[in-house]
Image 1 (cartoon, rainbow, N blue to C red):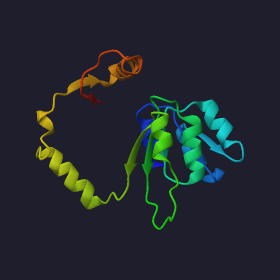
Image 2 (image 1 turned 180 degrees about the vertical axis):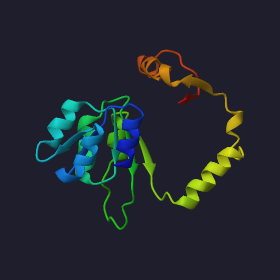
Image 3 (image 1 turned 90 degrees about the horizontal axis):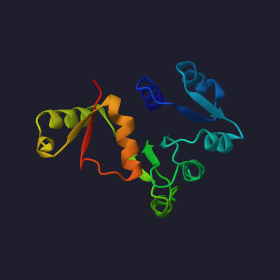
Image 4 (image 1 turned 120 degrees about the vertical axis):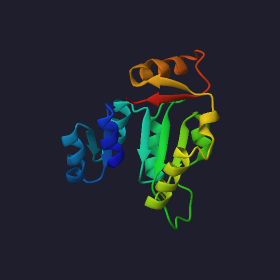
Length: 162
C-alpha cells in the first residue's frame, strides 16, 4: 500500500489488487483503482499496467504478472519476504522470454536504509564518477517514449524530481 500511495503522490495512475475489499478502500480513497474478486485477471489486463509491485509472491500473482505486463518494457518489483517456501513461485525464464524487467526488494531495515543513504552522501559507491544525464520530471514521459521507440538516449539518466 505504501508503494501505491507513493506512486499516486508522484502522479502515476495506480491500481491495487487485493483479497479484502475493505483494505482496498484506503487506496480507492487516495485515488487508485482497486480490484478484488474473481474477475481480477480480466480487470487488470484491461487496465494495461506497465509496472507491477508484487508483495504476495505466489504462483497466482506471478501468472497475473505474465498475463498483464507488456513484453519488452514491462517491469515487476518483487517486494517482500517469502520465508520457507519449498518451491519456486516465479520463472525467470518466462520473464526473460517476454523481456520483462524484474527487481527484487526485501530485507529493508532502518539500519540498512540509513547505511545506504550515508554511503550515497559520502559517495562511497563513486556514483559521482558515472556519466549521468539529469532529466527534469517534465521530460520523463518523452525520455521513456524515446527509449521504447529505440531512439538514441543517454547511457545513464537520473530524474530530477524538483
